[in-house]
Image (tube, rainbow, N blue to C red):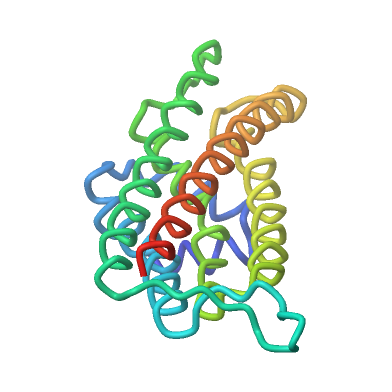
Length: 201
């Protein structure tokens, strides 16, 4: 699992070929990759929101505006956040499987879910920034992670689906567009959850 993470960050083209040839089951993949990687933003958000709190600039008196979440509320929110992330990977795997329906070398659903989980690796890693939940910093790091995720999709989709670059560009663009919608929905629900949690303190 760690080897693939490093490979996707340093030589994604070669790493996608290796991942495609492994025929990994969804159960094994979730157990060795998704469950661990998805825990990064969840644990970091839990620590950041309970110990430091969200930073929203400064007051007129020059004091920092922070909103913290109680530990008991944060546990519940973290579990919901975790379930949403795991579900988002599964949804994206199904989207990729659907997009590949007209290609002769269409991967099975297992492969598509594995691909979706690995392509989300930069987004998982960017969750570390939630340890210090400063809104603009989280947005900046999230944008960088999203850009690298887009690069992984464009680099991996053609070889993964066994199609040429032009077809791969179209398939990658469609997958990325739907992925951004899923991510936006996930972020919206996450903000509502953590914001609601802050009002319970």
